[in-house]
Image 1 (tube, rainbow, N blue to C red):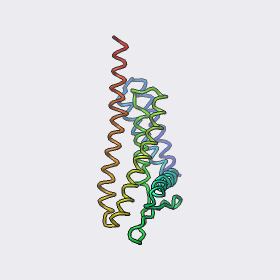
Image 2: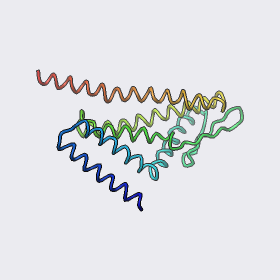
Image 3: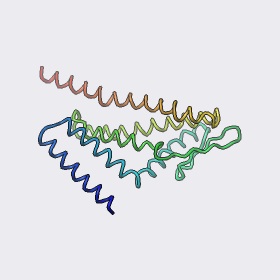
Image 4: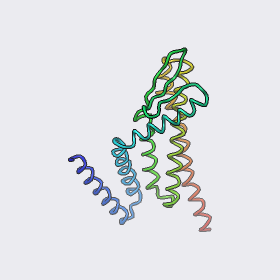
Length: 196
């Protein structure tokens, strides 16, 4: 009960500080406070509720790829990926880290307060971002599972902790560049054309 009260008080202070920054037209502070606050709220909210859902959906998505190529199978409700390697079964658990929930919360938080886009654009970009992060995470887990299928459990650390993350982060950096940097350049260019 005490923790819920603290979270509620912090949320009220967050909303109040957002209103102060908005009225003072301090856009950078509004963006930073809004993004950081929403991220913290989403992560705190996700612990009891969304982790199970995200892990289940992620395991199901990876299972579609595994079933298509017949290299591994999944138990979505148990968040388990079963990989067959030379008549041995290797089990992987899709947990909080593998669910993509932190990356999704970070993107949704950033795009929600990014001042370059209109509200409707932010909504569509948030939905596109959630879909992209889901697909990128499926590719990462598919890469790890395929590596286990081909090379066994000795390849897990390299495939999961190094190469899989590298693949995921390259995809995410490309996506962030496309949405934020390129998006802002396009918006500025269109505004410059309108003023000329």
